[in-house]
Image (cartoon, rainbow over all chains, first blue to last red):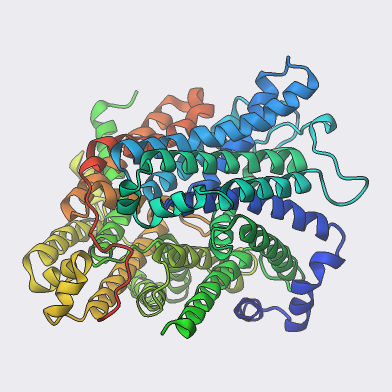
Amino acid sequence: MAGLLVVVLAGGNLGVALSSLFLNPITLAGGVQQIFVRFVLFYTMALGVGLALKAGLWNIGAQGQLLIGMVMVFVVYTFLAFLPWPVLYLAMIVGAALGGLLWILVPTVLRVKFGANEIVVTILLNVVAVNFAFYMLSGPIKSTGTALGFPHSIELPSTFQIPYILGSPITYAVPATIILGVILYLVIERTPFRVRANTVGESPETARYAGISIPRMMAITMLAAGALAGLAGATYIMGFRYELDIGSFSTNYGLVAIICALVGRKHMIGIGLASFFFAYMTIGAESMALSANVPTYVVFAMEGIMMIGILLGAYLTERRYAV
Amino acid sequence: MTAASDIIATVLSVMLQQSPFFIFAAMGEIVSEQAGVANLGLEGIMEISLVTTFIIEYVTGDAWIALFAAMGIAGAVGAFFALTTLRLRMDQIAAGLAIYLFGLGISFVIFNTAYPTGLTPNYVGLPPLVASWNKVPFVGVIFLKQNVLVYVSMVFVVATAFFLNRTSYGLRVRAVGENPKAADNMGVNVNKVRFLAVLFGAMTFGVAGFYFAGNFVSGFQTDIIAGRGFIVLAMVYFANWKPYRALFAALSFNLVYALQIEYVSLSGSGVASFTTLFNMLPYVFLLALIPVFGRKARAPKFLLKPYRKG
């Protein structure tokens, strides 16, 4: 694979690289846990991205909404601390989803009311989100602990962490996310909603003719996409990371979510399979980069190549069956 | 207390110094999108050119060789992007994002391979236009301290506008983005024109990546451009795909940026925790322009749509 070539060119050992790419994710300690953390993250975000794509809308800003979701977990935890435990627990999750929803409200309104291009606006808001999160981290939700170095938040106490299932490396977030995916599948793929959304996405003229409200469809799918990306922030923080620091800022999970949505062909179950595949490959690639002594950022290069490869595969199959 | 004229001079100087990065890339993206191809991989191409600039300049000690190397690499990636979107008719947005991810990852790998110890190359950069700029008050800081590319970028805007609106080649570029079928009937090779437009665009991203070194950063880190390349897409959008308006967008964005930097540096530590909040200002400013300018924006009709002959 082209990704392996990158590693070898970067000075790695091919044999070591190969075995770590495919075997390390399941054999190494913590590998399975890591895969499912990424799976939950990618799946939740990609569901939203895919939903918006059905209506022809590109949510390039999933990364920003994710970040706001992460920040909101701590904002709710800090400022609504007077709430009793179960209520606060839920409020943190709902708050994260609301944060993502609010963040995508701007591009949604601009798109629906002013016809502004959602790609441009969501990209702009990604940069704003990073700065906003950085501000929150260096002020309102900053840890008052004695730790030195870069600003970071407090660590959530264990009562606010999503527990692991009976000593397994999987948290309750995993079945919850799969259930969410199935619900979305039943609500979207098995009802007229799918056709309506597709019509808006592929032929607005036809949609107008059929009496489908285009602004409404756009608003529903975009807002849902934002809420899902925000929710992904909650499960990532409460289910794995427990604290927020600037290390979580510069990763491009939002783009991986877009790849998952495209590879899963915008289908709510297909996206799940694609997300699992990419979660597995990401962990494999990361451990490969580590064991072959190349920087983990090689993973982005590999994901880029994989995406081109998958698009190429789609092109070739289409051509084979085209007359 | 700093004198008011000093503050004004600093603000204008920073504004002009930062602008070429956006101006060059915006011109390239305008030509590319006018021809019907949106290149979302621009920031990835910039990252690759940036790392190329650092390495080539470190090895040769010559900024101009680095510039041509950066343009060459950028052109090569651009040609690959053109291959995927024009020949293989891949989705432009998906292919663009793939190029971005690839560029982001590979640029760091290249840098890490060249300098495994993380050594920061001793970057030289372009000299100021007039070496003794600080002898002239006010004007010196604003105009003479700038490197030559600041002025080249202004001329480049005029040249791009002239090319698009006043030459038959420019007409062809706009034709294949606006109505490729008609252009084809007129005997224009649609995909060839698009290829050249994408190649031109990618090479301007190479110039932007080159310019980023020294004027924005002096060393390399991963994801160092941090979304600033993507801002060019917003500028092109507000500019309604018109070169002069893109120049205006780039200058006003950087004016807000320079004001914000100057305000923070003058206020000292008192606003330290707000600094990052102020960082948002230029972007929020661009966002606020959307309802004003974005309303009338009209994209080239066949933007994002592949063309199949016949």
